Image (cartoon, rainbow, N blue to C red; front, side, top):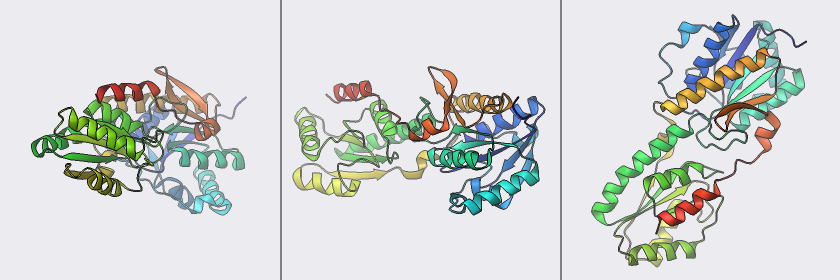
Length: 328
């Protein structure tokens, strides 16, 4: 028989993403529904090491479902990467009576959770919260849909200027190791080219594509670039290369940066966060541990944390084909 869960701790770790507050709310209220105590842990694993805890009830999460960021704050903790730091964290949890954890974050946060589980036998469940959508075991991470809509809205506005001045714009979006944002937002915003880490387009092919666009009568172009794309060292070096080889283009760069990680979450992200939060708590109550909750075939499923960390989130090859057709 699994040990009866009495008090669940919840924390957010790594980069913030829209919908994290909705997930916190879901965890807290699911605990209340099942008459389980809930403790909010501030500043991720660092707060766990320092015992920065606060009891949370249904009313403490009022009016946060629509807010971006995370009310529990987030921080990266080098100290938690040491056994000494993790021992301190465990001591604080035991002292506070916390007997299980829900971790909202990405693969780095899940790695810490898995190690903590192995060392102390502490029940943990992960909820994927990152705009990059680069976690194996879920089709959507919390915040991804909001980031897509933010990027598309920004590109729509940039296109107005590009068209007015007959310019070529390079728009850099987030995605260090995964091109999900660039590919989907690029298609949604009608980009002429999309550069992502998974596909090395090559400088020659980029120039060929831009020349083809020019010849076909396009007076302005939008190229969406994932920050992890390997075609150029930086988007600014890429701009210089294109200007040197195609002087007929007036090139501008727009780096969207952290604007993509903020803002009110979309309805999709709010619902997703709510579904995952409920499943995370109820999985712990069922005696399950060392899993991530995720969305697969529109159903909330469990994936072992090890697989979620080590697995690859594949790019949709059909979307690459769609992108090529749409750039004609």
